Image 1: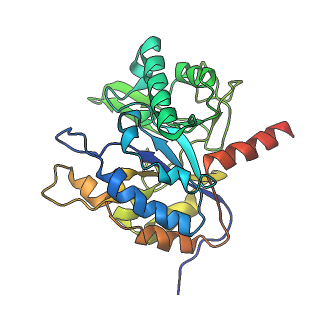
Image 2 (image 1 turned 90 degrees about the vertical axis):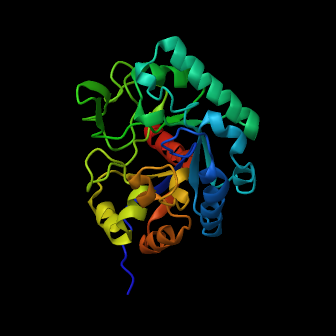
Image 3 (image 1 turned 180 degrees about the vertical axis):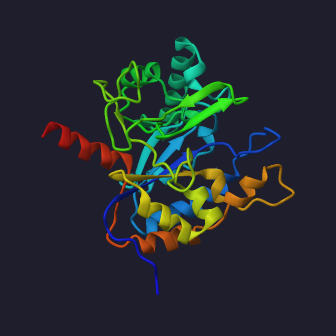
Length: 286
């Protein structure tokens, strides 16, 4: 008998399309060329909308057909240019603006349309980035992971998103964790109730299984579940590959567990950031 989760929420499958996560720092894109097409075929066959948040440094490897064959399903976003240095909130204003503009331009050239959604590398949003996104014509940011708190050497704060809302809001440029009057709609990534400070997403599904993922879903409290995936989680890594043990655990080169999860979400609706933004815009206007 299948385990099902009652239809009480909306589910957004949001993919960070980036270089593979390797310990030797070589730029490889197995996740983009091997994994993403398999997962796209699954999503397309079920009519499930999704986000593709492209990293600028690997834009040339992003399969065009993913957006071209089902433009109605795929929402195009930007995941910055690279993860090095990786923290926009620790860069000078001119540097972060150049970084985001560069990534925006290469994605527009690749797909013939500009990205309208953004996710900062390592969730490294700040108020200046919110303002930059507004000036560049973005509609949605999805960089906030409520409860996220990361320190370097346990001393220097890198990311602090404690206290941020879990439902969509327009951030304050002075403190992005508070509602304000910016042009950008913040749609937070869903925090994992079973792993403090971590996102609920494909890696957790692959490493812990469908039952644990369903348990976490039942405990979420936001209106939307923004389920985070990375392309390097869409391939099977071998012990001989230059990756960390936890990468081995979260990588799986077939969407079988995602298919089992989707079948359990009986009555749920599936949205992407395009559709969430349109819905929230109507709600704010009313």
